[in-house]
Image (cartoon, rainbow, N blue to C red):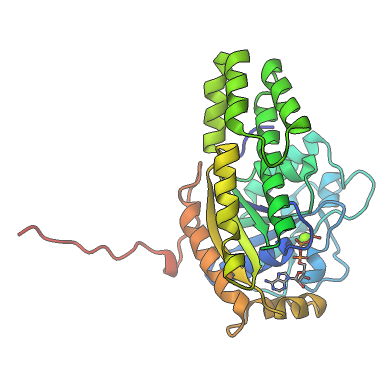
Length: 328
Ligand SMILES: Nc1ncnc2c1ncn2[C@@H]1O[C@H](COP(=O)(O)OP(=O)(O)OP(=O)(O)O)[C@@H](O)[C@H]1O
Ligand SMILES: [Mg+2]
């Protein structure tokens, strides 16, 4: 699959179910829209779609399935309005034969079209787990966010997810280099998830395929993942992202960056159960601060991602006031 690089595509994964990937995608979308950006949320949980329910749409008239099964030629025509100004939605393909498990070419078509949507940001909410579909959507977004909570199982899953995504990326990049592929396969199939060390693997690859070693190290170096802790209740939870960051660095040689955190607030449950997404972003609640600060961070980052053209500029992101000092 060709690498797409465009600032607007961000995918939100994390491995574990129920950590708040969908809530985060929705909250981030609302925050970006409130900052003046046009946003489309994509339910990338193929086969288990529920983002539409969260935004208050019970029976979506169109879904990604119409595109994947070629019933609708243009993705743009399938974008639904939501109750949130500036936020559109592409509903997930739900439990229909074939659509939940798109072929390689269907995925390519989907990613190409997502890139061309006429908005500032496309946020893909991924399902739980580490299926190839999930990993491919994650890997082909220049903005990759892993969401987790402070629970140790969630941290373990988030690390496992990042590792699987990296190995999937490497095995696609080196799909024709059999020696490398073999070592990657052995590592991901038999390696201990928490103790496997990229340095050892790199050494083995250097011995088996010295000409590939440099390129491999380069791919790892350019692979970026951003970290978000959700449902933060205390200082210990706040440390979670730092733990993931250092484990990724120590064991995978991977540079990850902490994007921020979202506090725990029972209003999230009310928003979801009552299908009123705007509750996620009310001025007085504890969630909005996290979503806004992460949205602002993303606006800044979008400009330095590979291939970034930078989102349309609006008042809050116009050129910073530069203090010009005159030499004495
Ligand atoms: N910041 C938060 N504070 C309190 N509760 C939260 C928060 N974020 C999410 N939740 C709760 O967690 C539940 C699960 O969230 P969500 O559906 O977004 O998880 P998910 O990671 O998308 O799960 P899945 O992998 O099954 O799609 C929500 O219904 C909500 O009640
Ligand atoms: Mg979800």
